[in-house]
View (cartoon, rainbow, N blue to C red):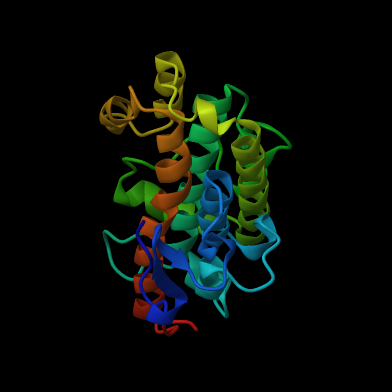
Amino acid sequence: MPGYAGERSSSLTQSGEGLVPCGRPGMMADVNEVDRLLAWHGWSHEADASGAAEPTAVDRLLEGLTTEQLRARPAPGLNSIVWILWHAARIEDTVINTIVAGTPQVLESAGWAERLGAAGVAIGTGMDDAEVEALSSRLEPESLRAYRLAVGSRTREIVRAVPVERWDELVDSERVRRAAAGASPGAGAWLGDDWLGRPISFFFAMPATAHSYVHLGEAWCLRALLGAGGGR
């Protein structure tokens, strides 16, 4: 599973099960699949999503950043940190609820779209430069943090609710098509094609977890370009 730029190498260790965060539940040799997945998932969210006692990758990324820095795009063609965190949460919300659980997305309750400053069920995939710029300027960091907490908490509930014996089941194709509709025109087709024929385990491991790590690396690079340092 990918890590993220800027994190000290001592924060990951090689075990018989692969790379896991040092000092986290995932290090236990006898940890089960659910706990291992939740350990990785928790590390990709702010600590309050999992109740972690120490800062996570996201907490360290955000440390000391202002709203202006979170919304900033250091150069054309680059995303903003706030957009990245929104996009990661939107992908997670969409795949876990629409595809895996077959339930309404977190975004569709409690007025989240309006609170975030991002109307509709867009997920960010395929957005052009102007769309990223416009959304970055509207997203409210505090509301986004609360939305991410709600999404992360919901994901953890669903992971615990689905028996491991079912993780190899293929997801419903119609649910995939509905989820991919949140991508920008042109991107939804390839995204839907990539998600079709995948088992539940893929959605737990990749879009809901590892996808965040990919973008966290990007976010740490943005932090450095903004002159905010590499974090702790």
